[in-house]
Image 1: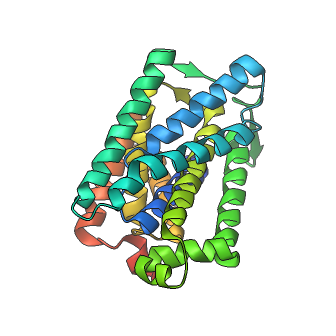
Image 2: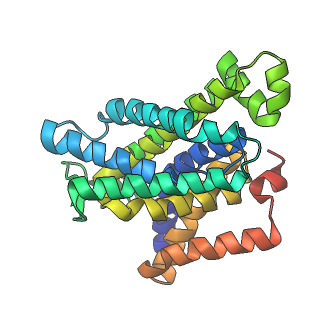
Amino acid sequence: MEVFLQTVVAGVLKGGLYGLIGIGMTLIMGVMGIINLAHGQLMMVAMYLTFICHQYMGVDPYLSLLVTMPSLFLLGAIIQKYLLNPLLEVDTILPENQVLMTVGIGMVLTETIRFIFSSDYKSVSTSYSDSTFFIGEISFSVALVVAFVIAILFTLLMFWFLLKTDLGRSIRATAQDKDAARLMGIDAQWITILTFGIGSALVASAGTLLMPVYYLFPDIGGPFTMKAFVITILGGLGSTVGAILGGLTLGLAEALGATYIGMSYDHMIGMIIFILVLLFVPGGFKRITKI
C-alpha cells in the first residue's frame, strides 16, 4: 500500500506539470483549430534559456520564469504573426499545411539548438534538486512540490484571465466561433497571435519548472510534443479543464506503469492510453464531463 501511495503522489505531482503543458496546446487548438506540433520544441527552448540563466548568470531556475515566459511569449507571437497567420489567410491552402508548418518550425528550433549547444546532455543542479520531505511514510520531492504549486497558481491565473477579463472573453469567443467574433468587432488575427504567445509562455513555464529534476538535450521536445498531444486528446480538443484531467491521468498512468511494469515502458503506456481513448472515448474527458 505504501508503494502504491508513493506512486500516486509522484504521478499527481508530475501530472500537474503535464496539465500545464496540455493547457497551452489546448488553448492554441481551440482558437486556431490546428495541433501545434512544435509545442515540445518551444518548451525545449525555454529549458535551454533556464539552463543559460542558471549556468552563466547564477539565476535560480524558478526565478528564470521571469525570463523564459516573456521570451517564449514573444517567440510564439512572432511565429504566429509571420509564419502561421499568412497561411490562415490563404483560403486555397489546406489546414494540413498549417500543421506541417509547425512540424518544420519544430525541426528548425531543434537543429538550431543542436548547432549552438551540441547534442550533449545538460542539467541544472540546485540545493533542492534532490531534497525530500516526509509526510508519514510517503516522501515528497521538494522541487516537484514547488513546481506543482507554481503550476496550480498559473492554472488558476489562466482560468481567471479567460473567465473574468475582456481579453479572455475575446479569446473564448474566437475559439467558439471566429466569424461571429469578427462580427462583434473582435480582431481575430490579433487574438490568434496573443493565444499562440500565451500557449508558448505556458509550456515555457512547464519546461522551466521541470529543469531542477530533468535532463536536457535538443531532441527532448519531440517526446513532450507527443505527451501534449495525448493530453489534448484525453482532455477533449479545446477543453482547458479536460487538459488538466488529461495531464493528471497521463502522469498517474506513467507513474503506475513505471512502478509495476518497468521504467522503460512509461512512454509506451501513454501511447496505449492515447489509442484506447481514440477507440472508445474519442471526445475525451470533454465528452464525459461536458466541460
